[in-house]
Image 1 (cartoon, helix red, strand yellow):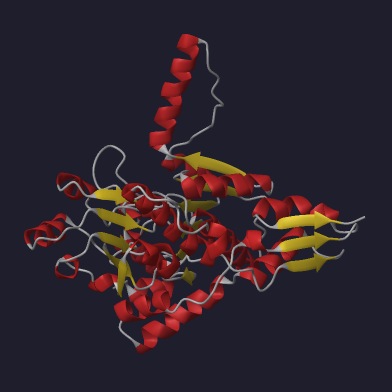
Image 2: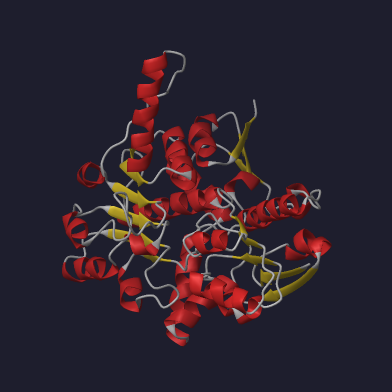
Amino acid sequence: MKLLVDANIPASEPCFAPLGSVRCQPGREIDAEALADVDALIIRSITRLDAETIEAAKRQGSPLSFVGTCTIGTDHVDMNALEAHGIRFASAPGCNAEPVVDYVLSALLLAMERRGERLFGKRVGVVGVGNVGGRLAARLEAMGIEVWRCDPPRAEQQSDQAFEARAVETRTFENQAFHDLDSLMAECDVLCLHTPLVRDGIHATHHLLDARRVGALRPGTVLLNAGRGDCIDGKALKCRLVKQGDLTVLLDVWENEPAIDTELAGLVDLATPHIAGHSLEGKLRGTWQIHQQLVAHLGQAEQVSMAELTPPAALRRIELDAGLEPEEALRLCMRAIYDPRRDHDHLASAMRHLTPARGFDTCRASYPLRREFATLEVALSSMAVELSPWLAGAGFRVTTSG
């Protein structure tokens, strides 16, 4: 069989070469013509696979029977069009959830440091508690930080399940408190968006933070978006920052990627090029999950394991003794693994020398090696064991002595 794979997908050779002939191509260049003789297509979110592209490829006689995206999100693919042509679709839910949470925690600690404030004692609102938001909420709570959740579809599902449990008296349901978005805006110091992009229906998320809600954000709010750029009205946010400048804004996702609004990027406190989930482990998990689903589609056995794909980390252990406050210890360990300022500076530099779109894509295509918090063991002396809840809660592997 013939496979077409986005050139920036890692481990494509060990995962897909055993299955057939592999051709690699930049994701933004994949079009109907590129699919003319392709049996399986492996992409990322930068490839728009819409109905028109699929129809055009099929008119040319493309044998395409499998499409896999090595990403959590699927809004770049018209799944209805694939189904109409009998094309199997696969995604990689949760593949990069852990590094996105790493990114969020690093960004929030950075924002609080710049403001001369502490993250501990703040109330964090998490909008969308799926693979990413759910993990973020759990880690924050493990660190002792109060979290308010907003997820209307899950709140409705919880209500239905609780009703069924009461009706049959045979099942238990652990109640999880949800709040509406306007309550989070009114009561939370930090607002983190982790919703998928849904354009229509009662739970649409396109411009979830529209002009009204952007205008209603409390002065001093920390607003972070690592979900989908179109969930915030970028023009309204830019207007708020120009006129009032009273928000701390951290953006990894943008409207109109890769041709992002450079004025908005220059106004926010942290601007990164949609790389929150770009850890080595996250990328490899995405590739491996699609590998698993493709071999299952073909009726074959797994060709490679995740452990075989993952190299050992260069930095494996840090030892901490007494003398550090919890947030100091967290910043030290986080920055040993990942410092978001690097990505902010890289994007700013790229956009000064290139067009916004080319600069954005260049940063993503040349992204440096990044590992996850869980690859680092933090060894605490007997005098520093009080740091354990915060460090373990943040996602590090903590060991203690004495």
